Structure formats: structure tokens, C-alpha cells
Amino acid sequence: MDLISVIVPVYNALATLPRCVKSILAQSHTSLELLLVDDGSADGSGGLCDALALADGRVRVIHQKNSGVSAARNAGLAAAEGRWVVFVDADDALAPHALESALAAQSQNPDRLVVWPYALQQDALPLEICREGEIFGVEKTGWMYLDCCLSMPWNKLFDRQRIEAAGLRFDPSYSLGEDLLFCLDYCKAFFAAGGAGFFKLREPQTFYETAENENSLTQRYRADFCDLWMRLFTRLTGDCEQVFHCPAADLTAIRHSWLCTISDGVQDILRRGEGSKARRKQRAAEVLAWPQTAALCASLKKAGRFSPLAVAMRMHSPGLLARLWRLREEKPDLYGKLEAIGQRFARPARF
Image 1 (cartoon, rainbow, N blue to C red):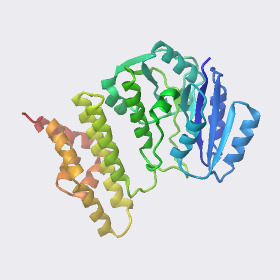
Image 2: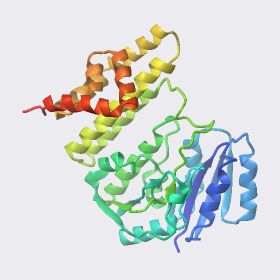
Image 3: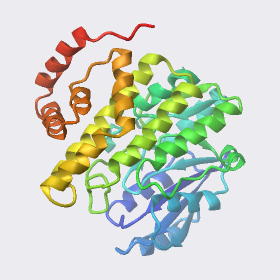
Image 4: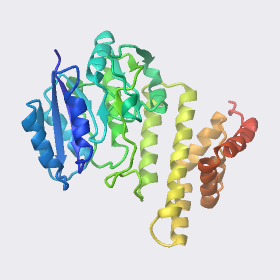
């Protein structure tokens, strides 16, 4: 029976860690090691990790000074001994047969990367083993991103030998989007070694906790948000186009997602950015004046994909962009009608 290394980064997770660990140790696939990486927790999580290790010999604990989730996952990878690796976040949980399902799918599809969807409610996880799923080729890597299956490491069965052979690790210099970079690097290495694409399990195997907590980065203002996502989407679209040879329609959809992400970042600069209102407006205008922003808008126009947000970007108008973003969030039907009207007149560029 193959040993699976389950890596859980732990930072101030006292409230959710017992649920997470219970779901892992109760797996129907019992040949596992659970690596709890305490990333300098200050709430007693480190002591809880030690207690859990005393209660079950499959649990190992790594204590380190607070260095971030990437460093914690890297520490887990360095200590892992399993044939396979699965990541789980300390506030999430696994379905009872998650590991067994992933291994069964891998056995039936040895040349494919096994991935699975996630559930937003723990009681939505299946109670039986899941072997059914869909096969996707390498060219559907972009679609995997759009289908919320590519960006995260906690919905995949990783081959540890391939991780080590390629020297893959999470990049600690990124405080957001590091998951996507790791998954892209793994896909490149996996497919270069003969991988034929993906196998996506039909049923969710991970419960993804969406409730915000005091340690969450998602609700904090990030001055480098737009810069980081410009780099991340540049990498994503470059790989999808040049390495994975994704269809044009998927690339256009990814670029539209890029446009929305930057729009969100710009409105957040105006709303929560540092300095005076004038300084925030200036900073937002600078983002709209970036060459990458112009190139993004041009690529969507070339593909015939209309967006009111792109119009505001081309006008270098942060205020209009912010109003349109609020309209999109607060009155999606009205925003959709506006987008549909513009789309009637948009045509792909001819050559």
C-alpha cells in the first residue's frame, strides 16, 4: 500500500486544526504520514500539534519560526517520505475516502494528474469512494484554471519523485499566488515527463473553509496586489499559450479574469490604499497606465471580447473603473446587459 505524505501548514489554527487532523487520520487509506508544520504559532497550535503526534504515531511535527505558508509547505516537502504528496490547509478537511479515491484514479490513469473539486460545506463531501471522473488533455490546462482546479495545491495528488526530480518548491518571495506558480511548475514537469493531461474526480474530496479569520490575507489591503497579479497572469497566459497550447477561447477567458482581478485591485487602491485621496487616485491611475494594462486591453479587443472595464482602463479613468466594478458586484444583471450591448458591436480582429 503506497505511503502518502499529507502536509498541513499550521499557523494559529487552534480552532480548526482538530477537525482537519481528524479528517486525515480517519482516512480509509491508512498508509499515511501526517506532517504538521507549525509556522511559529502564538495561540497554542504548536502544543496541540505535539499532543496529536503523541496520540497517533503517523503524525510528525515540525516547528519553525514564522516564515509563511510557502516555507511551511517546503519544510513539509523536505521531510516527506511518501510516494505521494497531498496538501491540506489547517482550516479545511478531507472526505473520508479522499486519499483512496485519488489513488484509485491514479492507478486507473497513471499518465494523468489527478485533481478534484472542492465543497464549501463539509456535509457536502461524499461518504463513499469515488472512482468516476473526466479526462482532459494537456491543452485543457487553461480550462482547469477557469474551472477552479489549477491554482491550489490542496486538490491534487502529487508524485513526490517528480517534485524532487524537478527540484520544485513554493516560492517564499510571493505572499499570494505562490500556489499557482507551484502548480504550473509541476504541470510543466509532469507533462514533460510524458503526462497526458488531467483526470478530474467527479465528487469533491476537500472541504474548503471560506469563513475569514484573523490570519487571512484575503481581506487585507495589499499595496503590491496589482503588480503581483500582473506577473502571475503573465506567467499563466504565457504557459497556457506556449507550453500547454490551450485554445484561443480559453486564453481569452483567462485574460478576462485577469482584467477583473486588476479592476478589483484598482478599486481597492481607491478604497483602502495608503495616503490621501489624491495619492490613492494617482496610484490607481499609474496602474492603468502600465504597458501591461494596455497590452491586456488590446489582446481582449483583438479577440473580440468586450468589457466595460476595459473601456475604463483604456480611458485611464480609475473613478469610472471603480463605479463599473461596484455595478458588477451590486447589480450584476444590469452590468451584464451593459456588457451584452457592447459585445454586439465587438468583432475579432482580422488579419
